[in-house]
Image (cartoon, rainbow, N blue to C red; front, side):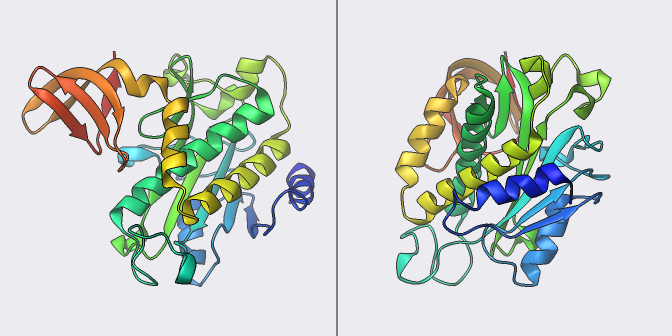
Length: 273
């Protein structure tokens, strides 16, 4: 394990009541896939998989996530619902499968956690773009991918890809992407960012499991200015559509006002105009 990652985990020990288990790899196909395998073997809540490189990283809608060595932070988490007396009423059904709303709220929680972590470490004006991209001035800085392997919803895998250096994205998307070092104009301690991401995920997922969904939704809304009052377009079964965003509902769906009324978008590609 590189020294900066090792030092990050040492710094984390004092800040989190229950330190996450962390598995480090020099190179993997996908950190989400490794995390899913560990979850199948019983890995506990908040187990993290960190890799120097992904050879088959992926984003939303089946896209490839360019993941060259040393250029980004690639990490995936195993997240499980709270079980027993402290479980979240209406979001989990005891020790059985996770409900759909819990899965949506996990993605929202991850967006808040990672945005707060990057802001704290860099003081950059990072915002969330629905559903869960981290952006600076509409340029993509990071992406989040939440998956329920096998569709069983016994646990969720949350993957996070953060551009640390410009080499983290290919030249053809350079006008739509950015990196922390490009924004700061200096190098960054990736170990410090990793430690803050691990701590932030611990704090915010604990809040979700404690039933504080409304507070998390409120924080997401405050970090996502484009979710209200922005013109967007998308395509559904009726063809191309256009409207103005009106925020998200309590299930994480994007609300868009059109000429025919308010539409609820739960997935798919949305273009900000």
